[in-house]
Image (cartoon, rainbow, N blue to C red; front, top):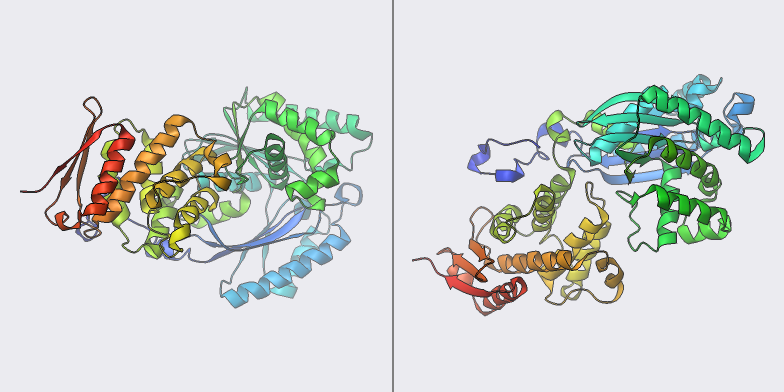
Length: 516
């Protein structure tokens, strides 16, 4: 992450770095519209990219199956072509109404391989004024990998993007895209292979063996899965395991879990399973073939960690337009700062609050510190909610909001801390299954963070001035609060009760020291 010289308007931004979302280069990303013409779907996304983490101002997808039958005819699916043109005509009108022209549009495997692909591209431009860039497989792999980098700066591993007619692989190392390959392993193309399931499996294994040789990988430490078919498999895996948090981004699986889910799919009624998992008919029809591809991929590359990414080629197109300074920022922290700037009553106090609470966590590593930072930034963004429901709203926001760079348990940990920020007795009812994702140590950590934020919220002075300092001595069990002179009048009965509750949560006793 970037370091900051602390000279902006005389403010020391410390470990947070100077905000970038109000700079001219970032403000230019305030509305970014992209269209992805894929083999199975056509989608338009309008991003609010100024905050670094992709916020979806508008998102619409039409399942067109442009690549259906391509292997046999060599041409785009006629019905899909009509639907795709109609969808893009609609998207052009929407973009004009949103004042976000020009749109950036790319087409992938089906359009680049079809004999009438360029004819379709020209028709779209005549009818809508939108110019579609037909990209090759390696460029598709690069953009998808950049989408992963949007959510995980500095990532390493193997990105696998599956579309309707192709599958791409890209290496990530030190936050940069390396070797890239493409293949015809899209489910739409695979289902056209003659000879039944046995022939399809043999073809998949042969192609993946070639990809493994071309990539030069003995094994992949981490595998990022990009694409709708992978997300559908992950959603079914959640259903099979009873996973309580159905946010697909950053969902983790193991090879053994994928194998069990493959068996689960084979033994299930697909229509009934589709309805339970809220998967479209067209997508579900491709899942049994996509599972064969995933199992073969895992057998060959043997990843130790599998992460689902909701960010792919469209997010990679947003990343392409970001200045370097914005790319290198932590998407979680920048998104939370943006939320604070818009919705908090005292924007900027989250940074002061972080400095106030962090002495309670002397052993926190950098991953945990960023969760503490994010919670402090979000501690007051839900104040408009009804007082009876603020705790629930903050939990829902943390666990379900579109935030990048958060593991599922980290979402729950942050959500529980924010609940403690608003109530001394969080949890219960619909939250129990989610809170059960945490171990006892993590639950206690969330309580301490939440109670510390609850205390700090009582001691607002201003967005730049600290209210005092906390010092925790675990061996003696002594929690000290040294108040600044300006904060002393704020320390009344309620603040004292919150301080004592924090001391009890730490397993100690509290001591107050006033400024002289």
